[in-house]
Amino acid sequence: DPSISPRVNAVKPSKTVAISDLATSLVQAGVPVIRLAAGEPDFDTPAPIAEAGINAIREGYTRYTPNAGTMELRQAICHKLKEENGITYTPDQVVVSNGAKQSLAQAVLAVCSPGDEVIIPAPFWVSYPEMARLADATPVILPTSISDNFLLDPKLLESKITERSRLLILCSPSNPTGSVYPKGLLEKIAQIVAKYPRLLVLSDEIYEHIIYAPTTHTSFASLPGMWDRTLTVNGFSKAFAMTGWRLGYIAGPKHFVAACGKIQSQPTIHQTDTQFTSGASSIAQKAAVAALGLGYAGGEAVSTMVKAFRERRDFLVKSFREIDGVKISEPQGAFYLFIDFSFYYGREAEGFGKIEDSESLCRYLLDVGQVALVPGSAFGDDTCIRISYAESLTTLQAAVERIKKALIPLS
Ligand code: PLP
Image (tube, rainbow, N blue to C red):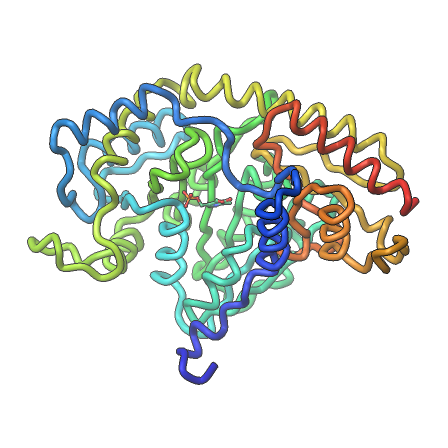
């Protein structure tokens, strides 16, 4: 479209839109579709957090806040990053934004020059390559395999580094695979990063708390020599079931983080002197302070949700292992299962046609099984399909029955 800027034209339309539109139209037509496509917890925001937001409104805490976030929240974030992640930051090394997504996008814009390369292991969260394109940078996609639990091979990483390499985006625990990078592997990656001074790591830790013991989370910035090479992104959406509150943050060396803040809003005495959005919601920030006050790793409110996610993961892994031909890497975190269904590609379904790829299999499972899932092609891996288990165990049981039944004519 020549009437739109080339930068925006470069952003690819989401492949998941067509199938999610189809799911919506089926639901509107009264078809009882089970939707396992969402990227958000099915839980309500824990009561003490919600109360803090309500109190903020009642007390008139409803005005602009400083661009980088309130001092109270940034101090609480610094405390959390020290206690839980072993990384030391001061409040001027933290910028709070309207969701981790904004923090990530601003970071890519702040550090990439046109033509820079952004290294993204696949399967990846759908937005990373588009964020790179919006910054006039080039996404460099590095495949991983299910037999390596979808973890990046450090040798492959090193072989793809060029003088244009600017950013490596890591996501652990991962959306869409649920894989968690072990500390030993992160250390190997850190040794490589150390050799290339222009390369930075953008570490997306949004699923940090949704992790299944004994697996543990390691923050990349906590590794020796990596503090000044890392931008750490985290937020409140997933662990605290706060997707609609829109609050995330970035922490890192001051000059990078200040550049992120500059994109968000020029920090002057005029708080309305905005670039993109200005400071995040005052109400959500009060709620976030309460969330961080719930105790280590979100205390009991979060561990109760993680326990439920774990039960569901166990049920789904066991159920799908019983299905012919599918391959699974047991996820250690987040609330997704990324299952290799390529065994079914090339098969014919009566009245439907040929199953060609992840998209047509998803279409088939929606048509015949009435279950909405996301094709792996959206995440850069066409062999797989993503199932979100942010739904009750009863719903998941019904979904598994439907999927199993729909696959019978294909085997
Ligand atoms: N990073 C990953 C890997 C995600 O899956 C998501 C949400 O889907 C986000 C970031 C964005 O989180 P937020 O809602 O805080 O913007």
